Image 1: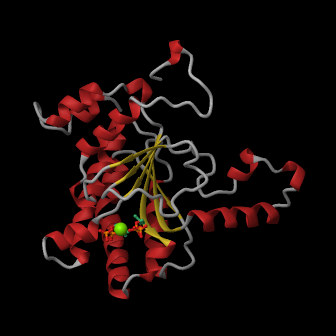
Image 2: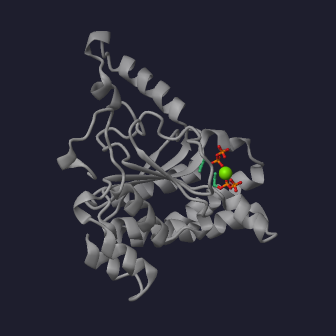
Image 3: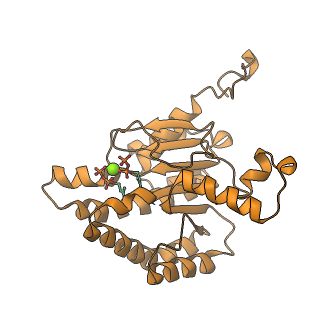
Length: 261
Ligand code: IPE
Ligand code: IPE
Ligand code: MG
């Protein structure tokens, strides 16, 4: 996974090629998390029903999954459905679930071909049995893949995840003395994964909407006005280039020699 891998899927002489050549492959974000937002507005702009925005957003998912894997991103997390999204009309919810099922059916071979491991984060119990089955099958079939880890956040809520982790820690018999941040994080859905370095949100909203609350403590946030169905590899490259210009201090101060890192 490298410059050559990404150049193989962008048109020669295209803006994407120019952007890809600027990326510092030694300083890629290990984990990129994305709040995919703006599908409804994309559809409204075209006088289409909201679900058409979700349908169009699938193409963005394909493009970003492929682009991330080729760049060499270790973990990609896409926020597909929040615990709060159940408030939407039942017909919109069921279309979202049907689209997810279709995506998995159509893309499983691409995930396998790109050595991508698929993983669901979120509460599964509330999902319909057919969806749970489909997710489990995709996880099992890709379990042996050693390339990019692709987390899909489904029926996900950051606060719910933290409460669930606390419950699991108690059930595992972790004593108050033994509990620290490292130990606690082992009970989160993302146990063993690096925290997101880069958090992308599309459609211009400046909020985190209950996404990965624990894990984004020091993530660099990049918001674009681009609506999710319009988001492509070039936007991902824009985000990575912006990330590489950030000065990550983690509360400390950087020495001049380390400036820009
Ligand atoms: C994001 O697009 C998709 C999901 C939250 C499932 P929205 O459906 O939130 O689109 P807007 O924000 O209404 O434009
Ligand atoms: C966040 O988008 C959830 C997902 C992308 C799945 P929303 O559209 O649900 O968030 P709010 O309501 O604008 O905060
Ligand atoms: Mg939205």
